[in-house]
Figure (cartoon, rainbow, N blue to C red):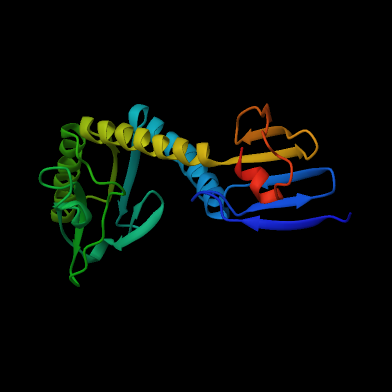
Length: 237
C-alpha cells in the first residue's frame, strides 16, 4: 500500500498537523506556526539587546564632549559639528519634547544652543533626569553663555556626563523582566512533536523537541485502534 498524506487544524499556536500513513504505521508532525517561530527569534534577539542596555543603565554612564573654537569657527559635540561659533546667540536647559509628558516629572533636561537664525540644536545626546546630571547640564549652559558673552575667550572645552536616575534604572529593570516573561511564554510555545503510531498494536512513540531544551520521548498505547483512520489515531493522543 502506497503512502498518503493529510492535514487537520491543530490548536492556535501550531501549524496544521502533517500526517503521513503507510500500511503499518502513521507518522504525524506538529510544528509551531511560522509566526510563533519569527516572534520567538525576534524576542530572543531583542531580549539580549535589552539586557546589554539594562547593564549599561545600571553600571554605566555616558560622557559628552563639547568644543567651541573661535579659530576654526566650529562648535562640535563628540566630534560632530552642531553649530557655527559666530551664530551662537544663547544657550538654555530645555525640556526634551519627547518626554514632556513622560514618567519623569518635568521631563528630561537637555542642553540646547540658540542660534541667531532661530534654530535650536541640541548640545547633549541624552536627556538628564538624575539631579547630578541636571546640575552638570546647568553648569554647561552657564559656561556656554559666558563663552558667548566673552569674545576674547578663544575656546570652550567641556565634558559632561549623563548618569541615569534611580527611576530610569527601576523602569529599565521592570521592562526587562516583562520582556523576558513574554519571551519565555513565546519560546515555550515553540515545540515540535513527532508521533509514530504502529497500526497493528496501537503503540505510539511521541518525541517532543522544545526550543532551547532537551527533547523528551513518551510511549503510549491507543485502545481500540483497529479500523481507525490516521487522523482519528492522532486525535486519540
